[in-house]
Image (cartoon, rainbow, N blue to C red; front, top):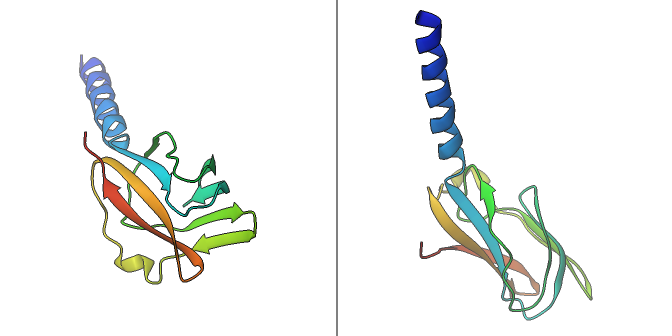
Length: 116
């Protein structure tokens, strides 16, 4: 009887943690005015994102307000890295869009919370 109760509790806890780890979804919107290739945010590959286009959502465990990003354009490689990553705020649960823009000749980004 104890082993059956333990199995049920373990299953329920596993489902709870599994659901919690899939509570954040991220997509990328390209507002740079240029086509981007090989877009990588954090360690996630989003692929090619045309100018003005938005990718499909990907599930993440947690999301911060900005993240490392790299992409290729016709003129070369662009990248963005947060200056103080230890100060970044976790955005919590929900759906978010990382918006990529150009600023001072380099790549910039910010997060927007999407309507559910």
